[in-house]
View 1 (spheres, rainbow, N blue to C red):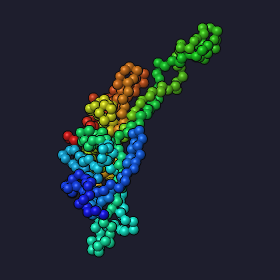
View 2: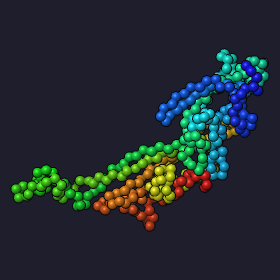
View 3: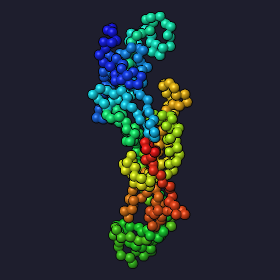
View 4: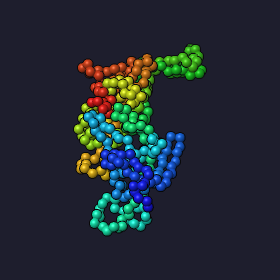
Length: 330
């Protein structure tokens, strides 16, 4: 093996190693489809450099003021849209043990393998080929949606009519006993509904938005983010929401959130591991037959349609600027 100082390839410098880490490329493989792509590469490092390389490939997020900055991790050269997702390592020489974490500092020379093969898997990310931007939540949040509807059974109060079928008569459709006295009706004509238990079905469409915020630093979660969530839970949006395709005011309801702790291999964080935050939002945003934009503030009123409802002058749902949950400015 040639001297380490002669190795040509070197990572960029970073806080733990301003001069970078030298390495050798051993192999590359991968797969590509229309939008998905994964690439796996094998590198050769000195065993003593493995821990530093882990910090280089997966840098710590940084909290600055009210924002979380995610430094760009290791990415595939000439393919910046593919970032490092995971790594595995093994001894360069099979059968010789590794000690990358300096567990046996008193061992005799050549007891442990001097070089380590590191396998890095690359794949796509929300930030694509740019660094995650705290001013653009689409670069660090994972978003999915599910559209559905609710069927409302509304009583009909005398305004409903039956459309008559072919060759029907008013007598036969209304229970009359003398069809000869009534002219033949054609489809499209109607008669009043007399049955007392015929409901009116009203469709209310909804969109469920699921938002995941991974790798939230504990200090940011504990001191800033949890306060924002508690304050805005159960509120509707007071401002247009670009994250949800520019949903108008009052159409998005912040329904719930869930926090999961991600225990970390990084040192110096006892009881302060990063967390993953999952949030649920319900969008009620459609137009009725009158052309009115229906929001969460509207309730179906039988025989009148969708109307806003107030209590003591206040709307059903209080408003809040839900964009501030992930905003870096507040």
